[in-house]
Length: 235
Image (cartoon, rainbow, N blue to C red):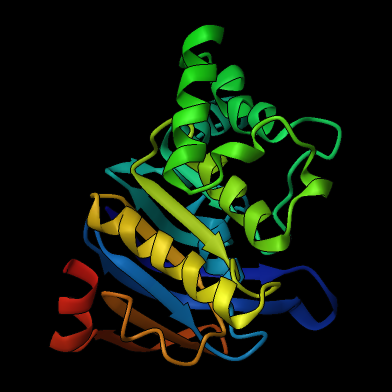
């Protein structure tokens, strides 16, 4: 699913700029729930932004399902991302003037993947899948943080992308709600999605298939979860 080769990202600045990632090489197979962990400033968010095509590398290669992401022009990149990557943010990023249902339908409208009636039906099914069908007609401000994150996950699933990237999806939630969101993301991997998640959660090995640790822009750990953790995930 994901191949990174000698991937580097340097942000402009004095004295040659600030390195965020340095020569990262990593291969991640289909259908895994991968947790990216590390201290603040280690390069976690930069890594998933490069995978999703939200940012461009300074050097190196990013391939997702055989597609060289950095080689895509802006218009092709937007179309590719809309159909192949679902993005979940820490602060939900739901449009405040649109209902929850309209927010979930938006990626389908943007990519033209479903006609309006089918898009509405699919959005309702996705909201049921994430456990909040009764919130469809409400504005995001009427929902709790956990409900908004569930709505954001439903929106990320709108075009049935093979890859879900989540940047601190539990960082703005209480521990009980965070556990429920993590379980939901794990269920997506069980259903065949590849889930790449940046997190500060301490014990992700019990729910993730793989834990990749970054430090100062470099991979310092790439561990498959314990058999017990994997059994829990795939149960």
